[in-house]
Image (tube, rainbow, N blue to C red; front, side, top):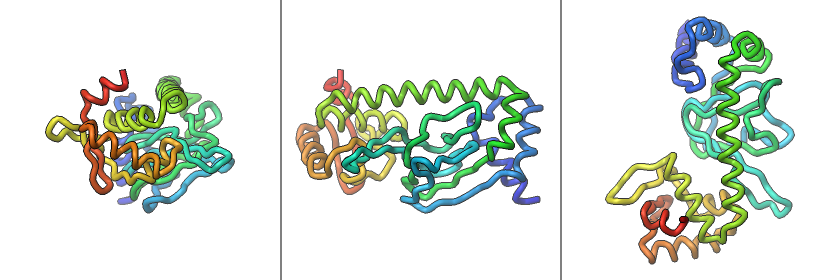
Length: 232
C-alpha cells in the first residue's frame, strides 16, 4: 500500500499528467501497481541503439543524456532530460530518441509505464495523445536546431552555442553570469559536441581569457550578453 501511495505521489510530479481530467488521472493511478520505479547510478547506460525501451519512461530525479556516435566513435548529444522529461516508444508515438544511447549524468530515478498498459489510454483519451504529440514536436524542433548549429559552426561557436543552450535550462544567476547547474568536465563537454578534449580545453581557455566564461573544476559560468552578442 505504501509503495502504491508513493507511485501516486510520483504521478503528480510528471508534467505530462498535469491538469488532466480526473477520470484520466484515476485510470493512470490504476496503472501504478503495474509500473516500475528504478534507481540508476551516475554514468549508467540504460538504452543502446537497437535496444530501445518500449513504453514511456519519466525522469523523476536526476538527468539523462541521449547521444549518438559516428563511425569514429565520437559522441553527439541529441538532448538532455531532467526531472519531468520523458522518453520511450509506444505504438502510436516515438519520443525522438530511438537509435540513441541514453546515459545517466548523475544518480537518477526513472518511472516507467509499459506500452501495453499505456496504449489503451491513448486510444480512449485523445487529449493525452495530443500532449505527447506536442512534446514530440517540440523536441524534434530542438534536435533539428541543435544539429544545424553543431554542423555549421566552428568549434568556438559550437562550444558557445551548447553552453548557452545548457544555461537556458540548467542554470542559476551569479554576479551577471549564469552558472550552469550541471557538473561538466572538459571531456564531458567534448563528448556532447563531438570534439576532442584537447581542442575544447583550448577553446574554453580562450573564452575565459576574454571574460566570456568563467571556469573552474567541473563548473562553467557564461556571461549572457557577451555570448549572445557573439552568437548573433
